[in-house]
Length: 202
Ligand code: GRF
Image (cartoon, rainbow, N blue to C red; front, top):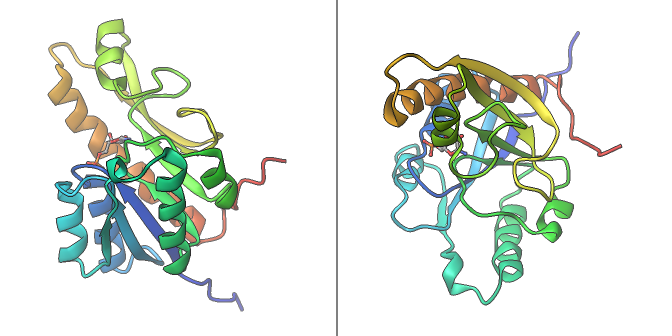
């Protein structure tokens, strides 16, 4: 007999559209992902991701980073809220802030990010444009553990996406996002099934 695994207690950090968040919420609603989004936090009040969360009945919080005196204070507020909500895994889904070492330590090995490139190529905020400008024929997306660097943590999974003749940023982004939603869900399924553990850094 297999023991029933506990639902993953997720906290999702967002800054924008929230299509990856939506894919997670949909999978939970359909019963295909054994997880619960305990809290969605945005650093921007106008993030559409907040509407998606509220529509799904998930608690939301806006913490505008500019109203904190320092990056450390902002991250401490994030930490307080995530721990209060009982979050075990932090999922970055278009969150446009770099986390401090203190935050990384607190959730060491339990922070995931998705990036729209095949890391270690094209880290940072302009990955899609840079892949086009560079003329690569294949790009893709990466789910990785978050460490103190920018898009530098241990890679968990990747999905290749070809760049087609005539692609522009919008057309490529649309195909990448579709691949991201599938890939993030695959990784979260593996986590929920206990096939991936917290990254110990060992
Ligand atoms: C995605 O392309 C993700 O890879 C990057 O930010 C974007 C977020 O998109 N980190 P969305 O807000 O989930 O639609």
